[in-house]
Image (cartoon, rainbow, N blue to C red; front, side, top):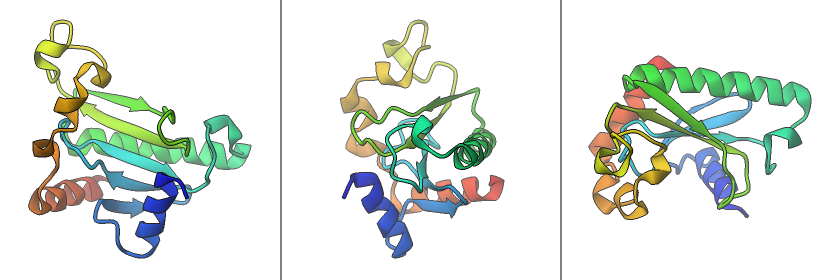
Length: 148
């Protein structure tokens, strides 16, 4: 079972502490690491590798829901700009990374503080202090759920 399918299974069992809301085509979860406060994922309910692998009607609905989630993340966390990515190189199950960005959030790692999130060294993005505490996670989920 892939990692995304496993996390979806935890949602179905009520065991995924990061779960925020279910949509028709996917699940909204807060990211495990919060260097970029409000970092959220939208996990597709279908186990496919790429967007073009989805049936057209489902794909259109999925993109519509993803855009809705992106707008909610932007509003909930006062983003200056949203970064939306579907990579799948690590886990080949369609999912979206939704990063609410703030001016200068890369600090010295960006060009004039700007650039893609992946310019941030992994040891910074995935540092233990970037994991939300139970209270922070609760607050992040509540803030996002209010906008969804």
